[in-house]
Length: 272
Ligand SMILES: Cc1cc2nc3c(=O)[nH]c(=O)nc-3n(C[C@H](O)[C@H](O)[C@H](O)COP(=O)(O)OP(=O)(O)OC[C@H]3O[C@@H](n4cnc5c(N)ncnc54)[C@H](O)[C@@H]3O)c2cc1C
Ligand code: FES
Image: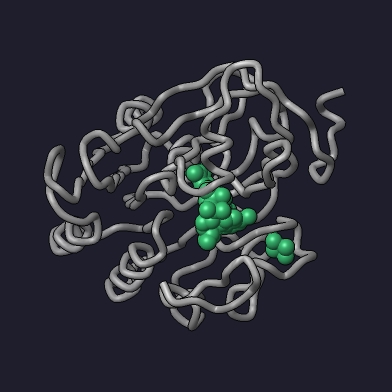
């Protein structure tokens, strides 16, 4: 029975729907009760038969019992996942990892690319009395996604979605961190949450902590087991898959790897 699936066992699921978000990003929808109910920040391991197993954040679906992955076409494995269609099968295990701490009040969510996946899920956990601002970063207009979806999720609370494109083809021009800097001059927030490219998160966390705002980021590292066994995701003195992926800003600024280095597939430290 579905409800008895152990989070560590692989379940083969069938892709039931595919949503083209942008020319390089697709959302693959499937049924799985455990993954349908994950906490914001938790992830799954996704087996792409014959190719690889990749960590993926779990995207929100409104339909009961449905879960999804929003995949950006990048290297060999993500391109293989991105190329799957309705009726194709993948293996899923999880959920794994911790989750964002839910705060109340004026909340600022800062995301880029598929880093928006856990932030959109976080939005479903927020209270109607919260005042929520989401900064969504993309390179160009055609790479913007989830704007309407996030707005719909937040329709009962005061919210503002600010899209920022690097080439200025849609929304505000520049980087999300520039826009965040301007917001911080005029407003204060009770918490800042971020997920996306690590250099962006580093700046977001630095700015939040300098402004004395509680902050958290969800970190990506090379993950092979996803459950604290293999050590491939080591991140300073912690494991991203088991101790994270969500860490507080206060902790992150003490971790010398954050924003500077990550490990390759063979474990070698590389600069960002
Ligand atoms: C917790 C977590 C959640 C993620 N959520 C998403 C998501 O929602 N959507 C999405 O598109 N991507 C997500 N990713 C990234 C994804 O797992 C892959 O890293 C990415 O798709 C690149 O894979 P690739 O095979 O195309 O890259 P490759 O060409 O094989 O490698 C390119 C680079 O990708 C990274 N990479 C490859 N394999 C892994 C691995 N097993 N674990 C971590 N990094 C790896 C490495 O930095 C590598 O150098 C997430 C990663 C983590 C750790
Ligand atoms: S991925 Fe194996 S310990 Fe984290």
